[in-house]
Length: 194
Image (cartoon, rainbow, N blue to C red; front, side):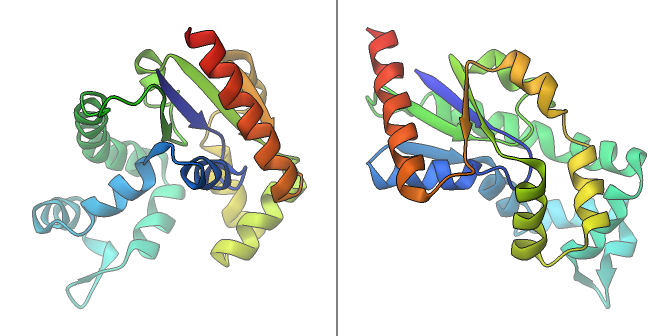
């Protein structure tokens, strides 16, 4: 069974993923796959060709690229057009490499935006109150509230995701409470798989 973990920025996907890893589950991290791209010279050449202003003195600056794409929808679509095929190929390769595990998880923020719902047997939504979400991101990424809203607003709305997913986990609780919720959900997934 392949289970997607999705949710907007700062909603707790990574915390859920880390809990699952702590208990021995395999969790693919799509953000890590995306970061890998920026260490590939061939990909940086493509970025330089399409986003030359994101280089300072010949050195790539991801913060400049992020600001650029979150301020311009067309540029964001172009970046997605460059990254999504690689990420999809990586996902499909990973699907074939379960190593006999009964449940494998994938942490992916833009699951529905990328059309990946077709690959998952079940989808979990990490969810939290908007103000908690916003404060988490501002503190973690050292960005302004305006920048948070730009990032958050390009993702599918919470209400729309809730309608599509199989499970919702409220991450606005203590880590110990969240562990219980996650482990209960894993138990339910295993029972459904039988």
